[in-house]
Length: 243
Image (cartoon, rainbow, N blue to C red; front, side):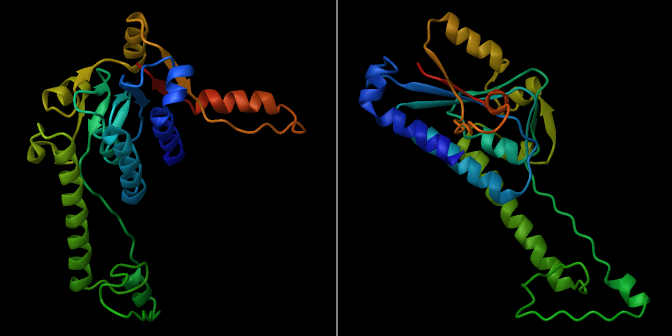
């Protein structure tokens, strides 16, 4: 993602490319449309992805439109809310939200203890690996993990609030997901429309449309390499719209 965004920013800043290839005036804004589908995952990768999308949002002369056709939940919504204000779109039955943090762990310390197995855990401090598979879980360790969760949760809420200041963050940060129409009523999204409808509307308005696809160098000695590349391109595409 970071390479694709760096490429787009480079293209946007290249006045010769904009003039000769895109046929766009150097003073005109460009709109980049990203189709986003994700139900979330680990905090760090999604926070990094959101930071990369924010680079586009913060770029002068760039409008970042994000379309959610099926789901943008938890980390997925963290990325989706990086859209330029007024440009977060969702289909009517898309699932949106799940602003929260969840974690699970299995501990078998007591089972081992009943079987006469003694476990030894050496740590430099109580905050180091407070919950493990075989080590004893202490109240201090649990409190430390809970405080970490609270810190991440607050950071998530603050990010959403800064990105979409019209949201009542306490109302939507319960971990719940909403369908598109309900999400719009809560200001989680701006418009109800599918990505295909939106792109067709742009075309009907006479907008110039470019499709960005990743390039994979061909291996001329590999059988079916052309077919493999075509399949890869179709399945991994990102929509890019230039005004």
